[in-house]
Length: 375
Image (tube, rainbow, N blue to C red; front, side, top):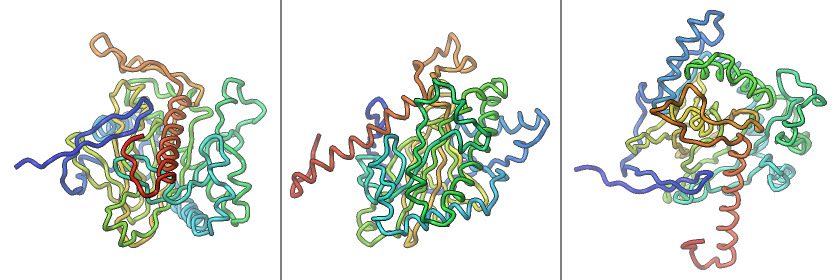
């Protein structure tokens, strides 16, 4: 007998979409579904080596849209220091975390408190808290003169210094966090060249689009699961796709990441020591005319231990207006998407998610004895 199915509502920048989900337990992924790709050739001076790597990445990006990378070049010590600082921040009392509350931000920087998001209305409140920051030119590992930022770029810069001012009491916090962020940015700029090759473009095609990029870091903290959360099958982070070009995700060894296959089956993407998970985001799917796949995923922390993840979201300069790239369109496969700036695209959903959460929970606060059926 075929398994039963259910409908999952997903939030997108243009409104809800729906996926059919198999009502079967999540299973482990196979190596073909989420492969481990060795980045040794990323640092090769031989174009043939880099083309070989591009073919591997193309296969993964057009398949599940997820893959692991090893030999990525980010030192273990840099990762360990960033994780240590994440725990130092989240283990503070709430009044200290409030110093960098996201409520003070214009651009969704700072601390978002415990159970203060609901990425998927169908799956309920996210059992996590997070802290995030965004790009500023003076932090760039490729040195930038803050006084020479092009005028068309300046309005799109989304970093805010209050994040660092409000964490200055934590020894080494900014330095260790920024070392990891910078290492991710260096790696992302190398990887975007491989993505260009995998789309049949010149290796440097995207270079001018990532000079002042979307480079958003989020530290996520998932507390140990309580008996009540276990009984409710509470989710850590609800089903969603990522917004920008691609994500570099470091996850600790606790596990919890799940990816939705095209057949509607949830598969587990367990931690693999020494690797980082890469997944395609919505904007790269758009500009590739759906050649690459931005895949739905979610997180469950089913353990009795705290879990930390550190996703780095990489995209084009926010002022860049991008349509479908020429190599991904033809007379038989015309462009499916109109041009839009990366910044406008991201801001649409950031605002939508916050507004939807606040509207729903304001109504619940007004009528605590009732349940919200629709808003």
